[in-house]
Image (cartoon, rainbow, N blue to C red):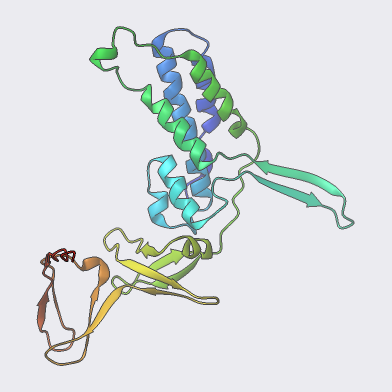
Length: 257
């Protein structure tokens, strides 16, 4: 696994601090860039710390706000502050370890706000264009809490089932199945989608439409996510070819008496 310390987020934070000591436009712009790097480093450290378990599609999502949004679908602690208290055998508090995080809502807002300053102004705004230093300093101060504490990851209880199309394991958590109606295979070359069915003590996943073949009268199947106008497939028993066709029907409005 890649060493999480390779993302030296504090370096970017201190570079932003030094740039904010100046009062020119370019320094403000580069301070925004360093703060974006800081946010990215914070998120990527968190992802790599749990990389052995979390879905690869999340690890490979390059925008930190989108990556954490995906992770939060599986883990409800993904954007939460964490606190670990250590007690002796007789109940005496020995130490407290904290991990400061940032909510998805705030992460998305700050990341996009900083990004808006990295582009050249449109011609109609060029004459009066400025970067408000006070706004950047406010963001800098808001992100300051992420420089304190220790990296902690509470591993979610990941479960899996094999994909019917490609055979690779599809990871999920109970938090995910309670919050979503479907899940896609995490293999980028597959991405077959499964409907999630839950009951009080069971969860199941379905990916296929099942029907009786009109020729051999045996069970034929097709993946739901493959169904579209013009899609062709064959019965798995007699090789009869089927084609989906979209039919548009108009229903006349009933005449009022």
